[in-house]
Image (cartoon, rainbow over all chains, first blue to last red; front, side, top):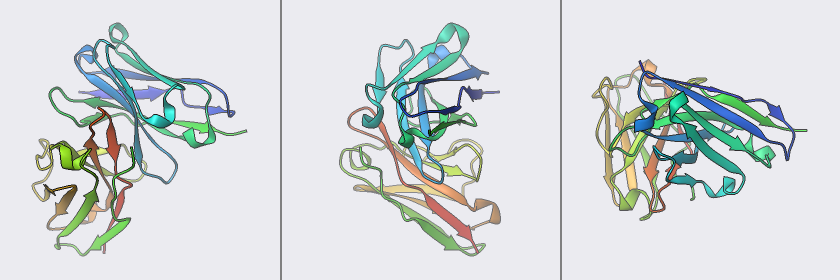
Length: 119
Length: 110
């Protein structure tokens, strides 16, 4: 059974940093593109970043470029999101999501981890 | 990277059909057949309902269907059931190798 479990969410002050993790099981992480998608409280979904299987390609939404870094460790079946220079508007539930092979959508999602940026 | 445009809310009675629209641009919906739709119940993770404009993943009811015309995609739910009450989000791949979501539509089953 495919499972994605996010962790690392916390309350952090503006300007601070946080590293999110996503543990994958039930499939071979190294074969898939992976993404982070976030949802601010009471708001809609926003795609944040994605990463190719061997990290050769990474893409980001404009609002996080230069502040967030997506990475992965296929040997540990884990996906990461390093978030620096955090702002209040980064407050959201962060989901990791799998992009299925040969398709451009997200077929499995985790339950998310909450990041709150506030002083 | 502007969000796709969806109506904030739609409603329908059990057994009826409803359609949710999703409008983008030629750089996303209009340029690719990579529109997908997600259902999200409160406090839950999104669930893929439609991909590649009109295809359904295994296990998704055939009451859910999708279509596209120009820069606008649509999700139709026929034979509305109480459990269909949820938020629905459209999404599209874009010309700059990113994804964009709609603002979400709250479906109320009366």
